[in-house]
Length: 63
Image (cartoon, rainbow, N blue to C red; front, side, top):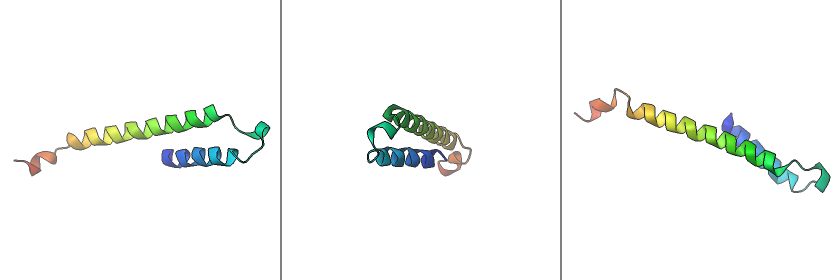
């Protein structure tokens, strides 16, 4: 869902370029949404990597 949200925010920013000046969304809001979603994905990746390192099956590969 977060990756889809980043794609939607990027598409919204791209489409806003073609809209007249008064109807464009605030670029700060689109950038903030993208940054929050990217931070969420980075946190999830960090958590998954930490769990994989501490996983019990890692010791089976290196006796």
